[in-house]
Length: 194
Ligand code: SF4
Image (tube, rainbow, N blue to C red):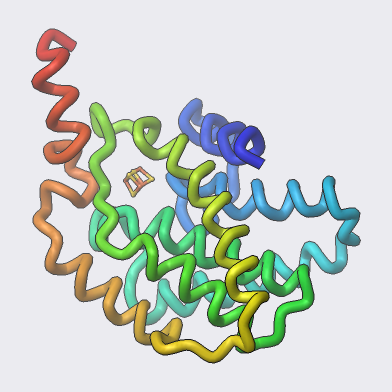
């Protein structure tokens, strides 16, 4: 699964063809989950496509009610949302109820709240590529956790989307795709000649 996520993210980083899910920088998470499950669990293409549609619904709710732009809300809106979409898709594939699917999606986003966008050299490579793989693993974990419950939980998906939006607006611009803070800043100090 990690390899699939890295492959798609590297395809994006090298200027190849990818599908935004929800963005270019976070494009590896959902394909990694869907391809991995299709290969390892023999899910039919129809079921994979239905799970993709469910993931799209969650992504569109965020896009409509908050943002999926790293420049607006940081990486929580990109990789965080991708994780949420992938968690929803995985939950549906494993037979989750609507409440369990919503819970999986909520966890996928909740546990990325506050995540900054600080790409080294302003390129969508570090930390983005590895981050896609880790988010894919988290999405499967969110599905597993949700499947152990009846889907009833404290923080709703809609609420976490609201909080993500507010948190994103509260983040300093250094952490929103400017390449001036966090890891990007360290890199500039360590390798000033580059
Ligand atoms: S760190 Fe920034 S550029 Fe990289 S994936 Fe996240 S939002 Fe996109």
